Length: 384
Image (cartoon, rainbow, N blue to C red; front, side, top):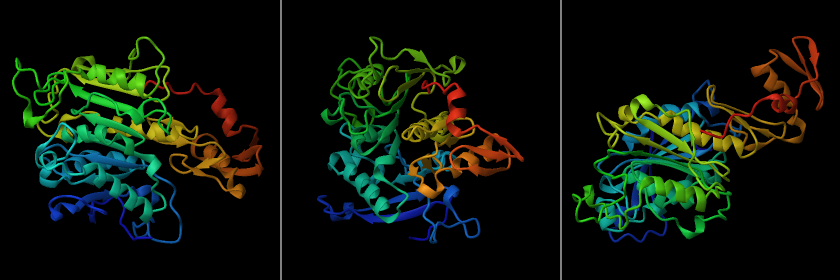
């Protein structure tokens, strides 16, 4: 395994395989990598060694037009570390991405930026056994938001910010291999650059920024509703009903989530946030933690884990292990999780009493098991 330091910015270069760009220089790309401390050796802060780390989700954070990878790294690295994510911040050529409607050099030259992201995903999963493509998420701002929607087939769930695309690729519609695709979309209603109405061809309106070339006038709320119904199979007539705890009316933030769905669809609108660029993205966008929490909850629930968004922990049943319950427990270790669960959350110091029944907690036997405890809990609402 490659030796890498954890909780540290690591710049890496990659040459795109089977690259077809007109300019050969555009086949040489770069990205920044951040490994969380949870899988590191405390003595040398490295993942090198013989112990196989647990599976961790991979999260792409994709910058805006005119920005750099550091914009997203600064905003999301700490939150990725706290939620046990491997973070990737890719660098766009000439600060741009080809995302169908936007923007700059990459769009003008039709660069294969979806292929670039796919190459990173494949390279990291081949290099590190704890990275698996099926547990990949992505968030992006502005041009990056357009790209995460354009490249959504690569990801288990996405969170576009101030950048959205109307229309849904046919392969995503009800029948995606993951059973839906979580969407957490953010849009300033007063955004002067990416309009919440989606209109860029209306001659009665000023020209859109950055040559954004959307050919429809589909409102961001309609985009979220379409995604809820066509991708995530929501059954209600009104598909965006419940207001979430993320809402903050004093700050003009309204968040709505769909219900009766295969996967979650949540939209947050902001009355006074513009394009999240005043003063800077990391200061203007208030929900970087919530984006990571959204992804972590989804990953945790893949194998019926129980996500605690306050403590940022995922509690596993006896069949699963790892920070987000993404690994199978080997037969001889399958009941260790029971005692570990009590030790970390309920009983204090525990010892295994007998396989599959109970723990000795502080010298006193308890018949509680993880499943018994879970049955008595009011499962956290799926309203994120």
